[in-house]
Image (cartoon, rainbow, N blue to C red; front, side, top):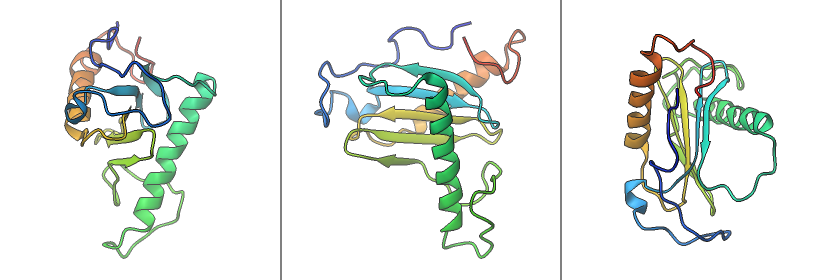
Length: 162
């Protein structure tokens, strides 16, 4: 089963520069670079890249690093949340929807967009830094995941999507 085909979801800029100019369609989310889908246990169910000029880690290390980053950011945002009195301990796993949440962060070369479903599925979309809010795109990807993967009787939960 193939979740996403070739380049049907994206269009990318042809040049690779440290801070590339925003490609056409930046506001529509048509410039995805990398997509990760993790389950609640940190298993990478899906990894697709469309524009990633530099590969410094092997895929297993890359997946662990990305999941660790998300785990740390979620824990940190919950810890510094000014609206709750009960802070918990830094580094303790949070349930989906628990604590303060973040949706994205941006550097000068990329923007990381994040969504966590109530079932603990984490979707990460790395895009151009000038890309707008991608929450609707991530919700659409999650709906596709539910429709074509979760509801598929041949799919074994927790296994990578091929």
